[in-house]
Image 1 (cartoon, rainbow, N blue to C red):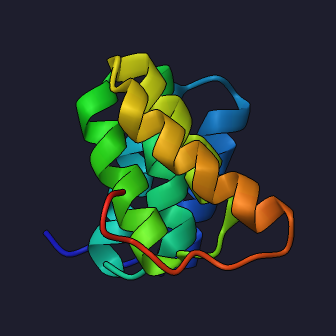
Image 2: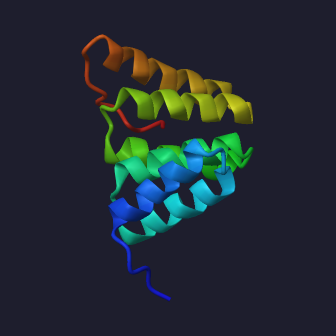
Image 3: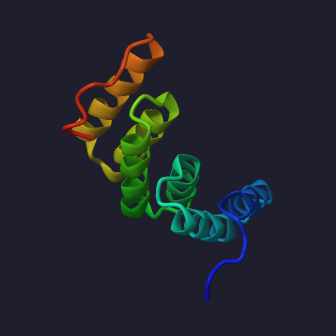
Amino acid sequence: MADTHSRDEVFDEGNTHLALGELEKAASAYRRAVALDDNFFDGWQALGMSLLKLEKVKEAIGCGIKATLLEPDDLLAWTGLSQMYVRDGQIAEAEHAKGNARILSMGGKVTNLGKS
C-alpha cells in the first residue's frame, strides 16, 4: 500500500513519536520517510539515531553511512556514525568517523570517504 503522505509529513510524524518517547513508532515513520525519498538526509540521520537508541546497532550503522554519503560535510552525521561504531565495538571505524567530525568542526572538508 502506497503512503499517501509527503516525505516531510511522515518525517514530522516520526519527530512527534520521538518527542513522546515512542522510539519504535518513530523509527517506523522515519523508515517510511526514506522509502519515499532515498536521498532524504534528515530521514536517514533520524532513523539511524532512533535505531541506535533501540539497540539495533548494525542497522543504525547502515543508516549512518548513508547519511554521511548524502552529506559528507555534515558534522552531526559523522558524530552520530562514530557513536554507532563505538556501540558496535568498531573502534578504528569510530576513530575515523570522529576524525572526520573533528576536521569539519575546524572548518575543513571531508575529502576521503574511502573508509566510512
